[in-house]
Length: 104
Image (tube, rainbow, N blue to C red; front, side, top):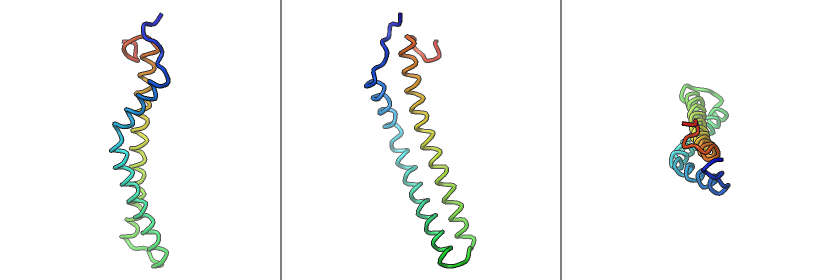
């Protein structure tokens, strides 16, 4: 018989909200970088279509902005995955009746 009761849904949601708040400023920073890269991408595409020519600066703007957007998206996904992983460990440790998720 376990000594710790199973976590309630409210406890799990509360833990998840706390973890997401920890990463809040970083998510907002990456969102801002993502928006700037989207604007740069759109501007570069517009200039390519209206000028009818592709120069090094526009090509760098297109490729650079997509790289920044991909990097920002990957970091946000990493933060959210980490938050859900920590909540999963919390649930596992509470349901197993032991102090740690790995049983130690």
